[in-house]
Every structure is written in structure tokens, then in C-alpha cells.
Image (cartoon, rainbow, N blue to C red; front, top):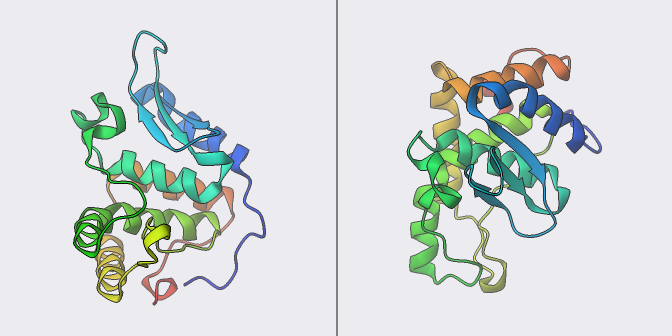
Length: 180
């Protein structure tokens, strides 16, 4: 992984950068929330799609952005993209299912984290059961990251990576920066 990280990434700068990139084209805004994260499509309470991340945490913002980048146009019309989610306290079987659907979002999050100069942490999102991110999961995420970097990044991920890279005055990403 990249050796140099920002001490405290500026979440307000990330919000501004995201909103500048994606508001006009996707009618989507990034919002600092006080509760659990959620994606809310435009509705009668707001004319904009909203990515609400938890407690102002930079990592939560990147993670929720990553889910938005995975979701196709139809999924972006649904609350939380219509995805299955079982909260903290999953069994080992449920955790394996969780890990299957989290490979791509966490690969995107890792790439965005490095572009932002922020340390990435694998998330099992299952604190009460004390089941952490499995080695197999981490290897799959790393493999996905390397595959993505070998090819063109998906459009929205690529746009944000480029903007973060320029904003943070850094060179293009390299596979050498991503190791377990």
C-alpha cells in the first residue's frame, strides 16, 4: 500500500469534489450524515439523489461512493440500491455471503483511498460477532484491484480517482501500492 497518507483527510473537500464531478451529470450529491449510511434516490422530499455517509467519516464516504459506483442506473433508482444487507451480528455463513458482494465495492474503495492519500482498511462490518475480513476476501479484493488497474477503471471511479489524484498532487496509481 502507499506509504504516505494524509493525517486527517478533509471530508468537506471530498464532498465538494464529488458534488462538482457528479451533480450535473448524475443529479447526485454526497452528504455528511449523523446516522447509519444510506443511499436515497430523488423523491418528493429532494430532487437530488443522495449518498449519505455515516458520522462525517472519510472512510464511510469513500465506501458509500464505492457502492454508488458499482450500482447501475436501475439500482440507483432504489433506496440503498435495493441491495440485501443484514446488519452487524451475521453468522459465518451470512458473512461469506456478505464478502461475496463486497469484493468490488471494497476494491473501488481501496483505489479511491490511495488516490485520496487515506489508509484503507478492509471492512467485515460485523463487529459484534468478531468475524473479521477473511484472508480469502482480502485476496479477492486485491486481485480485483490489480485487475482494475490493468484495464481502464469504470467511468465514475476513474473520474473520481483522477480528481483525487490531481487534488492531492500525486502520480498515477500503481499496482505496487496495493499489497496485503
